[in-house]
Length: 471
Image 1: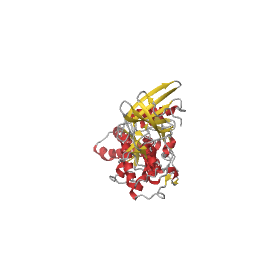
Image 2: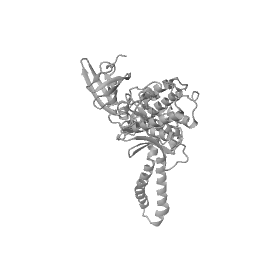
Image 3: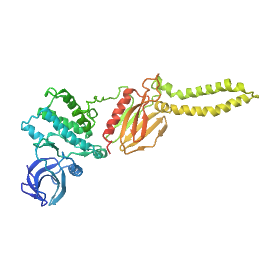
Image 4: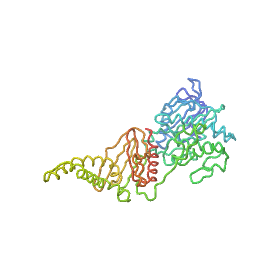
């Protein structure tokens, strides 16, 4: 291996190289001795002359920036970052506290076979580190949890190292998460699409635990479609096996939503929550859903002519007007007129005055109640969602278009189902809206959609929001 430095070299007049710790696409890592502080350090070096993609330098600088703001006993402390320019080259140096010990990968290759209790203890330690990372603002995703990046000391303490693939979720929001990083066999399926969410690191931890239990990478274990079938390879306690299954779910929204929830279930403080249901678009649905890395468009067609239910409810304001007219007219004829004697023509004038006064008031009250019915059934609804967050709500009917002002918020977006305050017991599915909630704003949608369509849209919007919410 062609290294940048040899044993005994002194870098920046301070760091004396001891030996090579490892090397990869992000540079070479050395063990060194700090001549000023008399402590062992790890130095990662990246040569500008040797990199073939500027993205590598961006990742290296991002690693240094994020490490400088971390403070956890399970993460080697950041110490220094500097550059050295020579003839024809420039080298970048990242200095950290040296985590003394062996990686889990090395230990297993030396025939170390941890017990289930030891594996659970390792899982708990790593989850505590991930809880810390996920509680930062913005949360930090490591994206490369694997046996090689977990160092175990003789006393059993675990260190998480190599933040070269690290990503704060703000950067993921800005770039759309287009960079594919990670290690095959430990990468979550969404990472192959250049995406990363909080549960991405849980998948990496789950596959790492399988390596400790089986001695094999998850890529070498049996698979059923995208699901790893480890039951035929290793026998585990039922409760731990169910927990591990949830960690390695191929669909990110079905895993534990965060490290904190995974930890409390592992520790037995909470039961395993029900498996989240995944929804597919109903076959007969005419809803158009377009999703890119940074934008989602939901196009809900008019339902006025699609079903007798929506047709009758869409026409309900007209029937309401007729009903109001009949009630007011009957009130005049049966109650008011018998009490008064009108001259010729006075009866007609009196009726007109009463109708002109009462009908607009009653009609206004009725139309306010029927507004959601009109817009949900008669108009085509289009929602455009972009981080962070620009939401446009557009109604259209023929050549008529009503575009509401964009909503802009720096807050978390969440879709959910909410019940209607007044149930229409004769109309199937007309029992709930689905809403987009952002800060104090609630956008109601989809009154006439089927329950399956509503659940599908809620799931899709929340999955999109999960990739962009943390800004």
